Length: 439
Image: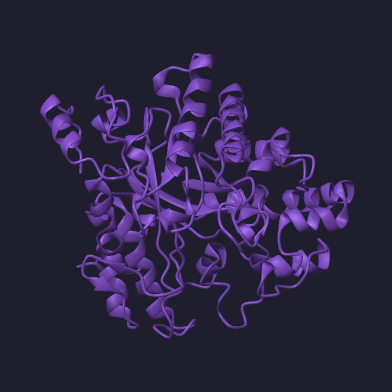
């Protein structure tokens, strides 16, 4: 990985000769895209407390009904999970359309107010959580919504009030523009609008997403009392893993970064107060020639890696995970099977584990086998933490809470709050049940 030394002209010349296919060959070598790597750190404003020990606030300002299905159906008016979200009311777009704008605003306001509140912030602080990643739909900036689109309104005020709570508690914030106009991927509620074919990948929708980024940047800097602990703004969550399905991704990332930096320039924000621009790591797109945010003008500053085991065996430098605990531990202790080092070789550093949970592959662990689950959790945390020795910057668990029944054990494997309360994760996020899990 690139260390703290200044990149020499010879180094830049070497980079020019070895540019990946995702980097344009007409780069001007004034260190625009790489200059922040000379410090091997995040932007100056970033609150970097040695390591991120964080949680995601999933299904709060952006609904994922599987996480709170009883509330979604019984209180908010959505459908039960149906297997194909294009065929039922399992996203924010459809629920707003079903209820009508006024009723939807009322229903969502109750959800926003109760799902994350001061009690949650206090408990996170008690558990040693030092950062939160907040998934947002682009519609948090309401002027970006087209006339023929239906999304709940009023979320920004709740983001504002809770961000102040987090700031006052000393908890840093990563704002994550998780859901894009038209949906960046098909058939997934986390896009806010479940569609049969993704519609995001066109310039008009890039412009809307990047307008939201500019406005959020402006709000963050204009309201330090509320947003003073925001360290970064993330461009997009989990685009398709096949680069062929993301036409224009490079152009979007360039536009996103320009939106953030131009707004900061207009506001006269000094460099040591600028927020970090965060992107999915280049390893996310493992099919095709992935666009690499390290080469865009003025940054990336940090890179988000997602590693899940329960959806299928992840693969790394030494092969794929097998359905046994030791294989899981080995892979996790290697920093996601070598992913941190692989990313660093193409300048995606520093990187952090932005989403993970403690649900393993297949029948590796019984959901109630505390020893097995504890070991798996320890290994994942350590592998991406600085003390793991691979260069990771820490982690954000997915997610802080789920409100479903835990009869089959799936709730506590995906809900940090429940995992701690039931003894599957340590009471202090900085601790391990076995600090020597990785040897």
